[in-house]
Length: 306
Image (cartoon, rainbow, N blue to C red; front, side, top):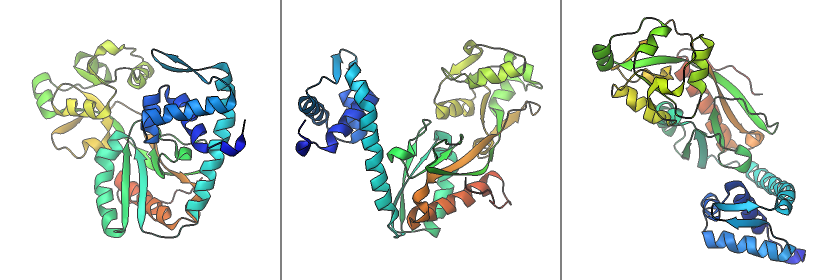
């Protein structure tokens, strides 16, 4: 292989295709065109003298040699991203854009008023908000900051626990007027329920209560949390949601208060480079305080960084 002709873009396209399973999805991830990704992979295969993918009707299938080369390519990617982070970390400007990743309920119901207040406090900072229930990879720069319900394991990240989210069973006043109000957890099975399609979190919760159920117990099923919540608001049934989501709607009522659902910890996660990046540090500190106040009004956020 002639290393003088080698370009990091070739390995970058190779990894994207490997991770996404198709040229089209890889192009979307890289924000480029499908033909460009295809050319990069063809050029890399030509330089290496190897076949990295089998083209199938369902996308790209990595060959055995392609899988063996993946670790080396990921090491290159990690080095390139580390270089970019170190360069970014030297910037001290408090004017610019910060990319925040959060789950759909957090992005739709918790963050908007907080970001409105942040506009007043930090008027020169713009925000890119990634609304997804998938955990964005901070190491790949998919986001600068993330609000997560799980603690990250990567040692290169800083995580601050900023509070806990309560979860309860909720229904609209209209639904309860038409169907009555359940008194105890077992009564829920006599009602129309809104829940997940593939996700089994609620099923496991019922099992812990000694009442195993199947997905068929839910009259409306969706893995989209916003769809679930709008179904509850429309009176389709009783659903499960974060307390901060329900608190914003006066037509929603908590039911079965004896139903003990564990709270979810909330973590604010960021690269360690915030120590030298005043822009990200400013947003991190603002969100840490504001989210803590939203979850537990009247308290101060004193939880330490990991």
